[in-house]
Length: 236
Image: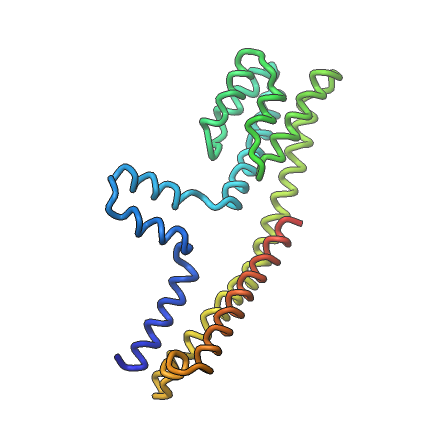
């Protein structure tokens, strides 16, 4: 194997490690590759499950749509229970099965605030919890539910716009961090093409192994720190 081919393989491996599945997922795939197809399908469903951040964002968007639809139904003169039932049917939630307690409470005149708080996920369910508080205030104090829902919807829309703006501003730094993480592998490819035999130094001598381990550690720490700062900026 020539140094250029080895460097190209190292580059492809580095890109796959960054964009591919994590080590635990890859280990699960290897261990279950010969299992029953049903178990394999279950494993694939777990692997392809949406990222928690994307799932929370989907719940937030659905809650905004729910507030808009509920406010429109209430303005049209429908009762709160009927308005909520129709609004739930018009909105596409990430997990429709989780809405069954809320649909039953709205249809049968049950405890809607408790149902809203119950189905609200830990991440992305802030809007549903606010809506539950508004419903409780409307029931106990007789406040206008339509105005409260409209205010909650406006607040959620402003928060969503802020998150989208922050994500757009962080797209550049994240792309730069990923590019910098791949640059060492590209450097190995260029050095191999020039006949410098970098892999022989990195894997064939103690100083080379020390440089390789140190570089990979610093590279991983840089990616982790960049991702940590981006997540903190998005959650602020």
